Image (cartoon, rainbow, N blue to C red; front, side, top):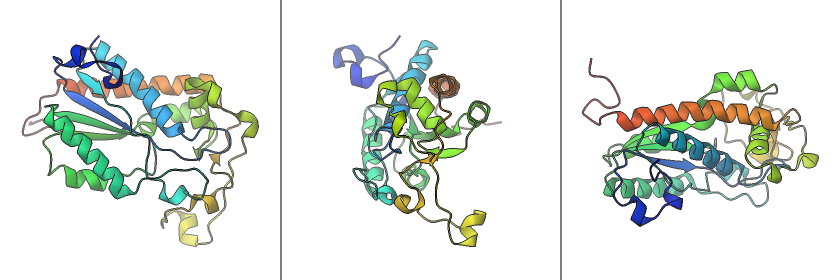
Amino acid sequence: MGQWNLAETTFGLAKDEAYQVAVLPVGACEAHGCHLPYATDTIQTEEIMHRACAEADSRGAEVLLLPAIPYGVNENTLGFKWTMSLRPSTLFRVVTDIVSSVEHHGIPKMLLINGHGGNEFQPHLRELCRQTSVEIVLANWYTCALDAHEAIFEEPGEHADEMETSMLMHHRPELVQMPLASDGSTREPVLTAMQEGWAWVARPWDRFTFDSGFGDPSKATAEKGAAYTEAIVERLAQLLVEMSVAPVDDMYPYRED
């Protein structure tokens, strides 16, 4: 087992490692209903990536897990007290500086693993790819095993719902306050185009939801959280193994033939 966790290793142990992939988790700090902690997105992302990096390391991948960024873009959810937000441009600058450090230390590849729906990195990465030699792959952990999500969970939702509640019941059960949970109902838009799903707004979360939750968490269980975590970790570990061994050449990440 290598020194894959930067936060918990030392210079003396890690200075001679030759990492191929840096892993940067990004979370958020926002109200998650009345029953889940503000750091839900960060906790989930950290737990998943600790397990995925450990598994990838055990399969021979040369990965380095960086400390998570615990804040995200929450400009439209500030209506709920104590939510903390970075402007998109601020978050992009933080990521750019970390990528610059990764490049300085000679790590050729990075997995940017996102755990918050408000963090939309694609426009920034289109710009950043011209400014760095680091080859960056972006993944949202909550979309990498949608087949497992459909098989495991019963109630549709988006925020502090059955899925997120199950994940926290598995990862940090002492932080879940189920007696405070609501049914996660939301308000309907007045615009027909929004009802039909082809017009978009940066939803003002305090108007759209009643307590910041979106989706009924009542059927959540730790067992569901464990099963979903296992499916996600397996896919991300495999991604890290493939990224680690893939040579960075003129065609990466594609085959020449």
